[in-house]
Figure 1 (cartoon, rainbow, N blue to C red):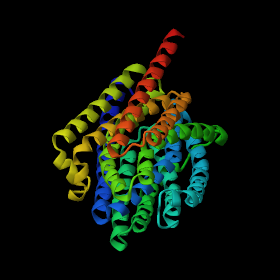
Figure 2 (cartoon, rainbow, N blue to C red):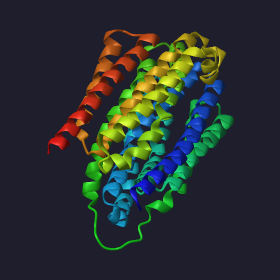
Figure 3 (tube, rainbow, N blue to C red):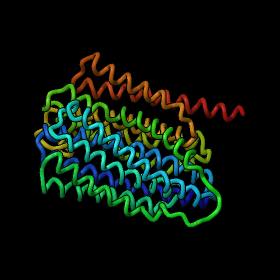
Figure 4 (cartoon, rainbow, N blue to C red):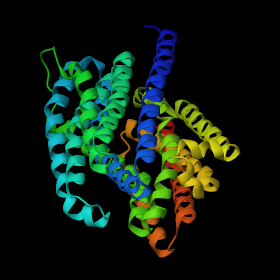
Length: 404
């Protein structure tokens, strides 16, 4: 295939993946809005904390995805061997993370002031289908199987909203919602299951090498998800239940701003892994930053519409601060892209930077005794400084490669 043909395939595949991710995120967003309307602010705050646990726990799934995608992008001739190795470690990773999250219920239940230990245990069970989905998406991403990847994204969105919605209808409580989400999470794992079948013979990819890279990627992504979700846990722990519910409502907008541009990193990841370099990175950062600017400006100009999207009049107290949540999510989206650029280059050293930002956020939140506006502002400032540091690290890498 010629280079122009490859670029055309990437562009068309990017449009397809973008459509799938947009639909998925709209459906996930729709479930959150549905929960905000069906639950009291106190109950919705608890559900938001649970979703934060799921997001942080899902880093193992994303670590598998990044590892599989990178391995397949740099060595497409070893596809069957890589797939076989991924299949061997996926169940191990899923069960291990599920057990770890479930065991954390002893700590997280009182810490987050939850009413039932089963809530965190169900979050742990969600980790198993999440691990399978991550491995399957990595295989599709690394082989540029955009149609299959899009199907998995769509199955994830529809599975979540149908399962979560059914759970809320049966039992309009945080437990009903999270059990429904568990049911819905099985759907995308089943849709992508054929990707885990390897048909070739010969050669061998060490499970230990693959697992090591997945662990390194998971560490980096764990730091990012801690950074991007700690504020919901801090709000739940530090604020009263009403203010924590208001903050959870604003986070709907922040998460939308984080997730919407992620199709960019999905599509360009293989190119970055193959040595796409500074030009591909600059285009990707420019696109993510541009989308974030539009989201923030739109929220500032139309706060009433934004309020409808985050739960309605019962959250009116937060209307004037909603643009700050959109800004925080937009900056975190840039950090997400730059972190995946580092993973594509196998530059796992940037993990230290992200964990340093996590420490700054926690210390700042408790030392300054911040409340609603102060916490979202602190998140934005911390993420902005981290984005600059990650960009500087990528530029230093480019100069090192050019010098060699």
